[in-house]
Image 1 (cartoon, helix red, strand yellow):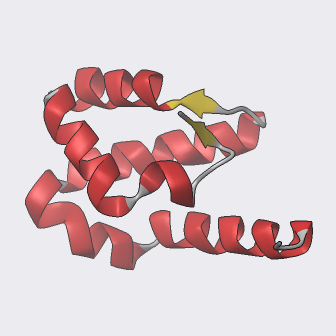
Image 2 (cartoon, rainbow, N blue to C red):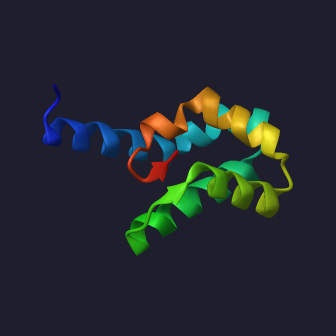
Amino acid sequence: MATIEGQMFEFFDSLDFFLSESFLEKYRYKYSSFFIRTLQLKLLSLMSDNKTIQTHKLSAFLSTKTGISIKVVKEFFRETELESELYPMVLT
């Protein structure tokens, strides 16, 4: 069983990647820079407010804000493993 310190390190390492320029570069052609930046800003906002968000609320927010369909947003979540990588910030 992983220690709490190990889990925290993995979470912050994943968060660092999701907020990085390399993440933007990797996914911007498939999903758009605006979509990735909107996600990154939302993650920063959640961190600054010390809040969590459920995946269905995050997908609705991203779809509304960027105009990308919920289906495509959910595909992005699956492709990036967002739910498992950013747990406990993003809840299922």
